Amino acid sequence: MSEAVEYDLEAIETYPERVLTPDIGREKCQGCQKLCKFYCYECYVAMPSIRDLIPKIELPLHLFVIKHFQELNGKSTAIHAKILANDSTTIHSYPSEDWLDIDASTCLLLYPGKDAVTMESLVENKTLDKYKNIIVIDGTWKQARGMLSPQMRQEHLIKHNKTIKDLLLNAQKVSIKPRKTKFWRHQTMGESHLATIEAIYFLYKEYTEASKNAKNDNIDDLMFFFKYYYNVVQKNYIENRDKKYTTKHSTDYIKYK
Ligand SMILES: [Zn+2]
Image 1 (cartoon, rainbow, N blue to C red):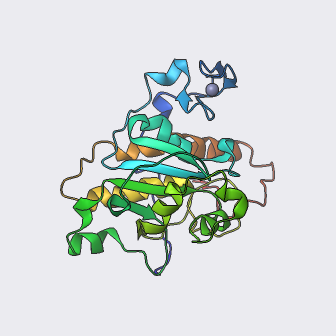
Image 2 (image 1 turned 60 degrees about the vertical axis):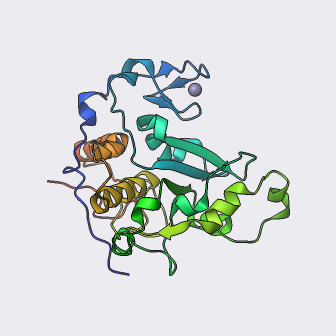
């Protein structure tokens, strides 16, 4: 695999600062009544004051996020896709009893490895257009490996209808070009392991660039919340230079201009 490259987040055409400002406080979620900032990660809805102001994305392929049950909602950036592209995103827990009645032959599964193909190769062999759905796994790499293993744990089997497992096993795996993450959270797998929303974004970006038929309206808006939080973290550290920043970040993480 080629080496991961830096990407330019500033150049991604989404402008969260026009809507999200530091003075927006917590609001009561109309679904669960909890106090939330910007969105509720249990109900997957934006808070009332920003609901009509944030971008609305219609994805060219339906996005199925399969979330490992141990992956905490509050930690997951996949939720950004659900908030921003509500009608074309569904999130399912793994294992779960959700019945996914989708033909695996119409699904691309984002997962690297020897049997993964690239968008370009799908264009070359003229099969790209038959895909209608994208599946992205939300979880650690260890959890993802378990989800893709043909073996099933006994304790999972009982709360599982197996359609999600079958989809994961039979969908065409696809990989994206390696890029360095800009995620601010500590993870031990190295800088080429992207946050889930970064992976979703680049997958759709590569898809819309490869497919002649795909609309490419505002895929960049998938990075709306990510870009906002990234800028907040950067600003916070630049304004507090004396404060030693956590060694959890790689040493060149903060971009002092
Ligand atoms: Zn809620």
